[in-house]
Image: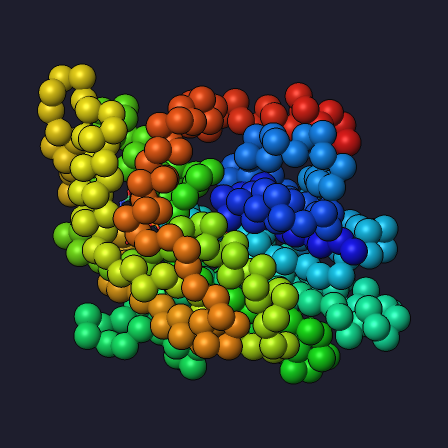
Length: 355
Ligand code: NAD
Ligand code: TYD
């Protein structure tokens, strides 16, 4: 038995691969294009582990997909691969359409051919798990109920529109062709290996460097935060017991305005790594021009996954953010190599021409 994971060198994917192989002996084939967001150093602990097979490649490459599926015969595919940063999608939406829409389409088509040719038992057991986001639902008014799986899809950014498009393709491949798919829509993640372009890691690394902490607009936009390892446990549970064709929202009931997140991180850093000049980290907070089309509030109603699959997050925001800040303090070398770009040399150095 083998899993094919796409995008397994990114933030959530690498946490998933590490957590999976810490619990199971079932091998993982990890297909990742290694864009700027892919960092094989995240998976350094698996370098000599035969259960992890890394393949550098694109989910949009049909020939590669066909050969990987034929060679490794996975019993499931978990699709993390995506362009994931809203700000980048505003400046350059093309890559988002190529990977999130066209790439998902090609992956679905390759999967369909592979799945159709499987023996009946393997066909029955096969799963395609598509990892998506709460951002496809659009924005919520301050007093509106959190997003359920029935909420209309109303994406507002090029990123969320491309993810919503991929969700629709996945749904259609189930309804039209019977492909055994399940989709998860999760809220904002945070934790180890988070690329420091996103709010939480950016604030930690900027604060430690004494740089400004940019808060968009009034800082009162609300996000619903989940520790990444809880997202990974939800995906494992859905893979194990989720019902075919269903959508599961994943979240930790942790709605917070951005400014509160930034102040919490500043307080933890004041405690764990006080500034040498005796100042407080929150003096670095700088309000900057808002993101265009900025969604005001996301919130996930996670009752379905709890009721039907018994999944609940293990971390509260307080425990998760403390672990996250501690991880960045303990992994200053990882941050340095991400910031100076040397993390991109990891493939050549450690995998040679095979990657
Ligand atoms: P990320 O940007 O950190 O990682 C994406 C990974 O996909 C990278 O390793 C990248 O190299 C790879 N990739 C990009 N294009 C590819 C392609 N064409 N072919 C193969 N690999 C490709 O993203 P993330 O934060 O880890 O998110 C993973 C998934 O989870 C995404 O689908 C995202 O939409 C979804 N998601 C993210 C969050 C979040 O808060 N980060 C929340 C909910 C859902
Ligand atoms: P981000 O981490 O980019 O995730 P997303 O846009 O997918 O929710 O941003 C989280 C929130 O933080 C979002 O409301 C935008 C805001 N933000 C800032 O205020 N300053 C920043 O420098 C960044 C990167 C984000």
